[in-house]
Length: 486
Ligand code: NAD
Image (cartoon, rainbow, N blue to C red; front, side):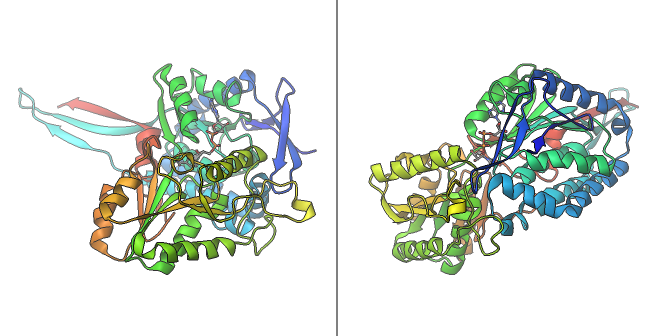
């Protein structure tokens, strides 16, 4: 059986404790590998390697040299595209048709975008008058923050991990990554690419394991980690923030959401249906930006529900290798239990099940997989658990509204503030409503359209800080002011 080891100081190493756990393919329930679980020993070794690497050749490189290496990392991922694709789909159960145009290309792009960005960012300078008339000059310089702890989730494993590692390395930091216990393979494989690209030993380190009382907690509690960047659930974000308080370490938190889609009667219905289908069901609904609450203006409510139902029922459920499949399994049986518990709650709370609501019948070789049906509900009260809590599954609740003010109020009614999608052909309305939505990202007539130079992150309980473009520099560098008396 294949083993997945830690990557520390440029080498793959097993756990001293000998503790391993299963890596399961969620499409059929089969164990595909055994993963080494890091204890405090491995986490400490990884942090020490990362600390030492800051003082090694990495710390002395010019920006141009670092940029060249990071381009080679991106090219290295692309050169081994099929291996990364296979590994990502085996870990997650997602269709190759999806991962081949999102997860893997974006995983590579994250290195090039930030490498190129860092070459062209200016800082500030201020001339200042002094009483002696000679004056002073202030100027800013950016310096790496140090050792960055990276904790990533399972829904877009390579993409979301490199979204942090790309800018961290571009800015000259070193990293210790703790990928999700569900999806360790591509993060581990990236170690080989780093070595081949000439990234010095200790710059990129990986430790595997779980969160609490395991690798995740050991990493966030480690006193020699300078800052922690995390993507995952809001509750985990709170725990990590508490850990980071010790030693006053900075955090960047990209957390959960319960995102609203607002569909006005003046929308282009074809676009709104296509976009909402993607935002509710892509990646089996396991996208933090996904829409789980859809508010539709009353005159088009019935038509919208009927067309979304038809679209959901036309999704092709299948295993990753099925080229016609556009709807995979959930990431694990544990997550399926959570999603199905909400399917049950919807029934208990009196929802009208427009479509789905259960487990699809799969052929014998996939029967052990974590499959659920794409599901649409109507008729639930605004305070029901299904409408207020993040499910992170392929499902949405649709509710009618009558006025623009009501739609805005509904969209803003929860403690989350990650993303929103507005569908209208009235451009004044689009700007007016977008400006009033309490979310870090608002799309108009689109969804998940990402320019990597723009700010990404959530407001309210959906996160702290922004990553993307120059905003990533705020977290991954220290801006130092140098004041020179002339
Ligand atoms: P999770 O919070 O359960 O786990 C995320 C990571 O944190 C995993 O690597 C896990 O092992 C680790 N972890 C768990 N407990 C920990 C602890 N006490 N200390 C240190 N590490 C710990 O999240 P998940 O289930 O993997 O991912 C789904 C969640 O992620 C959803 O809530 C989703 O909305 C969110 N998400 C947010 C964004 C965003 O950009 N805002 C993007 C993707 C996913």
